[in-house]
Amino acid sequence: MFTGIISEIGHVRSLQNGKLAVSATTTLSGLELGASVAVNGACLTVVAFDSSSFTVELAPETLRRTNLGELQPTDIVNLERALGLGGELGGHLVQGHVDATGMLIGLSQEGSASLLKFSAPPEVMQFLVEKGFIAIEGVSLTIAALGTSDFQVSVVDYTKNHTNLAYHQIGDRVNLEVDIMAKYVKRFLEAQQPGITADYLRENGF
Image 1 (cartoon, one colour):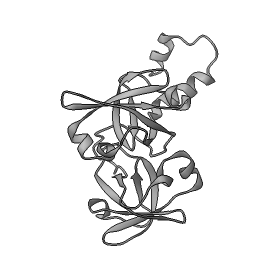
Image 2 (cartoon, rainbow, N blue to C red):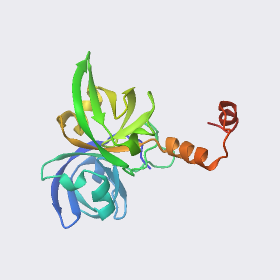
Image 3 (cartoon, rainbow, N blue to C red):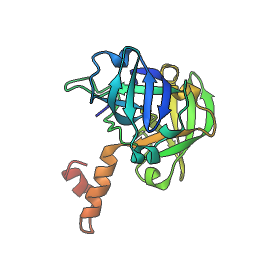
Image 4 (tube, rainbow, N blue to C red):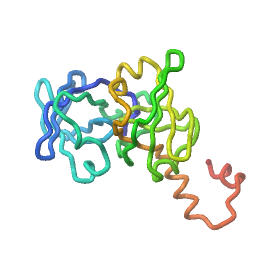
């Protein structure tokens, strides 16, 4: 489990035969084989590391669901170590299970914040609500505006400058993960008989 608070940005060293090597610094502290590291929001297992980099394996499902297969040497990636028990939850609960990719379709400035607009497939849009959470490239963000096939987030300078969001351009694909709570609510509703009311949802903790 992760929080969507990026600990550092790393650089792709290589991507060959389904293995991704990433140069890093703080992410390597206390790292062990088998540890989980989120790379651009995808939870991956460390299979090797040295004093300046770590290597993870990319399963076919990971390549289908994410943009990781498009990475090139020197590309910048967002890194986050798994949340320790009792650790600070600074963002929101992020599983590291990327649902799909979206595309950056708009970029503008509003005061000191950047407004980023992304298109997203229906399987992502169905779970989004205004002021709800979404993880973009592993970054925990709040949805500022919602369309039928796109959404917008407002990113403060600190977040932008300490993640790879500062390097994305119009047309770039990004990894998206919706709030897991939205999935549970949808599953709960699908399993119920007709007649669910707002009062019933409140009584059951929703």
